[in-house]
Amino acid sequence: MGRTIELSGQTGILLLPLAALLLWSASAGPSSEEGNSPLPAEGNLPYYFDTPQGAQSSGLSPGDRHVSLVPQRLGPTLHLLDSIVLQETRQSYIGNPMVMFVGPDSSLYVIDSFGQSVLRFDRTGQQIRRYGRAGEGPGEFVSAGRAGFASRTVLGVTDGRSSGPPGMAPNQVVEFFDTESGEHVGSVRTTNVSFLASQGGIIWLAGIDVGTWRTLTTRELSPLWRGAREGRGAGTVVSMDRVPVPSSYRESSLVRGLGGFVRMHVGDEDAIVGFAAVPFLLRVTAAGEIRDTIPLRARLRASVSNEAELMEVMDPASRSREEIFASVAPLLGISRDGKGHVFTVHQGTKLLGERGQRQIVGRLYASSLLDDGSDQCLDTEIPTSDVGRPISAFRGEELFVLDRRILDIDLGELRTVVRRFRIDPSSCTGEIRKADG
Image (cartoon, rainbow, N blue to C red; front, side, top):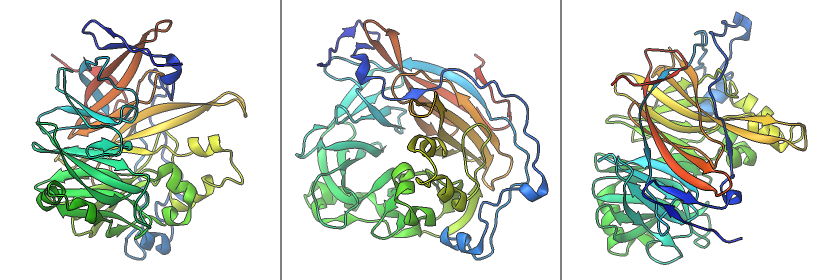
């Protein structure tokens, strides 16, 4: 059945076949769990790195261990600041949103894997520009959707390619566009980048590079930009060359398959790096020095205490695919507020129904913690619809959540909404409140 696309007035409503939209089930309502979980008995306290060998594999000194002694608390209070409808047209609409990020002028960029393009919206929801299209030529995308960044002059977006030199994993490029004009500038080849960021003229690239088993690299943006513009980017391959990947990623293709992406927040002096499947963050410098390891805990979402436990729950001999998928809530985003607080968003899942007929239901959870891993406010559930897959993005203490809403189930009227929250790490209520004023 073909796609029927109609725009209803200026409300941003699209009419789409429902079969193309019901790709992912997400939660629709706050958690009913209340109160703080008790502090576990001393003998049951989780070790985030339970052996010196495990510590070494994560870049720590032998013998370093992190033990959480803080009782579980409710999640941070989320203050709803505003909600906007993204304006879409029959020629330029969001088919399957994969990644969203915020530009320096507060523009919202949405990478759409269906249209193989990037749509840019202003803070009122008006569509400003579209970058790229489907294809294999210059400025075209084969498989857009893993990562992107925007400065005031440069937009960079990753694209998977079907062919390339041996050893690329996968064959991938970063396509560069002029942010304002939309002109395609050129591209550089990379290895499995799943996060991009630009800070102070430096581009940070992160991912799981199976060629080097490293997860991070940095480059000066201007030379890459000039090389791409002058057509020299095709001869440049940017690989990860610092910060070893966790041992579970090297040992298990299943861990790489289900959690094979990296998230990061880049600051003026260092970056916080997180891997989708493991329960810790790394504070690293641009040179790749690991300054600290920050344990992550969970209250509502599924989690593991260390990499050994992760390998156990990822065992296909003892668990079904659905059970494995629901056993770990992948990390979707990291941010900081400049005041010593770190914020995270995870995608949790639950299984409904009997074995063989189970439905995977997705849920978004926001948490806050101090940058030494203490004072963790855990898992405020963010209600989302059951249409498609909710997408999140950070800007400091602000959290943006893109969600799809069906207004008429018979007609398939669809609206794309972005809600903006402020995370309050000083108030651990687990509630979502409307901001004052």
